[in-house]
Length: 142
Image (cartoon, rainbow, N blue to C red; front, side, top):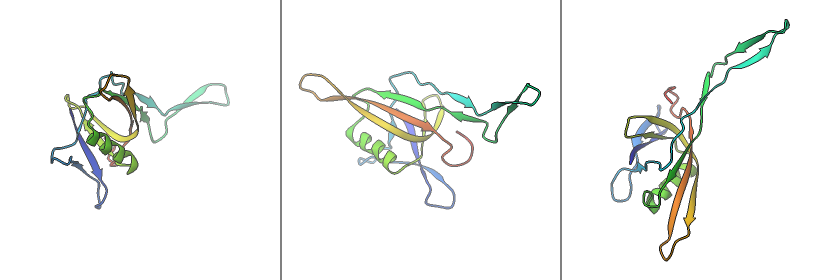
C-alpha cells in the first residue's frame, strides 16, 4: 500500500494531511496491478514564419503531465476505501500519492470503475481508476 494525503484548502494556504478510516487507520492507496505510465507532454508549438521557416513558441506553462491509469485486484480495495475514493471525486479533493520508492503523484481522481468478476458464489470486483496529474497546491511540484 502507498501513502495517501489529501489537500485541505480551509486555511490561508493549502495543507497536506492524512485521511483516516473508521477504525482510525490512515487511508492507504493500493499498489496498482498494472504498469504505470508517467507521461509528460510539451506545450511548445511551431509557427510558420513569413519567410517559410518555422519558429518554436514556448508558452509560460512548459509541459503537461499525462493521466495515470491504475488497476486494482479485488482484495486490495475494501468497501470503505472505495467509498473514500468516490468521496474524493464528488468533493473534488486533491490528493497526493507517495509510492514505496518515494515517487510522488499529485492531482485528482477523475473516475473509478468497479468491474464485476463472474465467479461462483463469491462477489468480487476489479477496480480501475484514472488519476489526473495536476499541481493541486500551486507550488509547481507535480
